[in-house]
Structure formats: structure tokens, C-alpha cells
Length: 222
Image 1: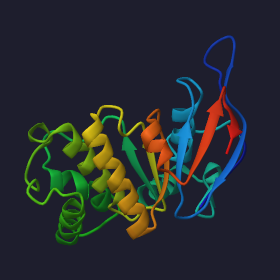
Image 2 (image 1 turned 90 degrees about the vertical axis):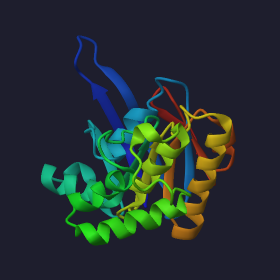
Image 3 (image 1 turned 135 degrees about the vertical axis):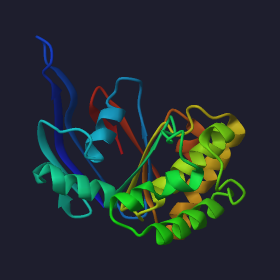
């Protein structure tokens, strides 16, 4: 599903270029749940942004579902990202003026899904998340854990090849963190969903199939 080879990312915005990723290589198989761990500043978020097509890289290769994303033109990359990549961040990034259902259908509308079909799909996903009574609630009417579940439903909407999650439990208490972890595992077991999850949560990383450790931009343990 994912193959990263000799990935280098250098920020050249200052007089002294910063090498954030340094000859990073690893792979992830379809259906794997992989935890990405490392200290703050190790390169986790930069790596996720590159894998998600949100940032460019200096050299190397990033191949996702058979596609080398660095060689894609912007329009093709945007379409690929919308169909193949799902994102769950530490902050839910829900649109405040949209209901739960309206937030979840957004990825579908972007790729051309018909609204009635998209709404049906959104409600099915929200039911899986245990939010069948929250369809018409706005983000301000939801708890932190419920907002993250809506965000996960949104990430799953287009049946993406890969879900990238950046500290998804960082703003949650232990109870909601546990519930979200259970939903990740459910999506993995029932949908064969592939996950790469950057986390400091040892309980979360312990439930993954495998752990990748990054230190100073280098993969030191897979």
C-alpha cells in the first residue's frame, strides 16, 4: 500500500537549510495498522503531510497504492488525495456551520457524489460510530469524542486506500481515547482499512500491528 524510499525533505527558508527527513525508507502493507512514534520535532507531521500530498519533498520516492505522488501534476494529486487518502487530525477541523452529516458528506461532494447518495453513506458511517442520534447536531453541540468520531467518519467516506492520523487522541480524555481506538480497530477489521497513526499515546501504539520509530528525520526501528 505504501512504499517510501530514501525520502529527503529539506526546508530552505533560512540561511541554514534544515533537513527534516533524512533518507527515510519504509513500507506498509494493505490492511496494516502502523503507529508512527517519535519525539516532537522528529519529523512525524512532515512525513504525514508528504504522504497525504499536502507537502512536497526534496528527493526520494513516495508510492501509494501504486502511484508515485511526487510525479503527479497538482490537479491529479488533488483528485488522488480526495479519493485515496483520509485524514484524522488532533483537532477535528469540522466546519462549525455544518451538521454532522453535512461535514461527513464533504469528501463525497468534492469527488462528484450525488447528495442523496452521499447523505445515505454519511448516515451509515455515523451509525457505525454510534452517532445515529447526532445527524443534525452542529460541532458545538457535540463532545470532543463525538467530534473526533465525526472526523473519522468523514475520513472513511470515500473508502480511501490509506488513513493518516496525526495525534488523533491528543485532545481526548482516556475514555474517549479508548473509544476512538476501538473504532480504528473496527474500521481495520471490518473494512480492511490501512492506517498510519502518529501518536504519543502508548496505549494506542500498543494496539497497532507494528510500530515505526522516527528520530531526527530517520527511521530507526520498523
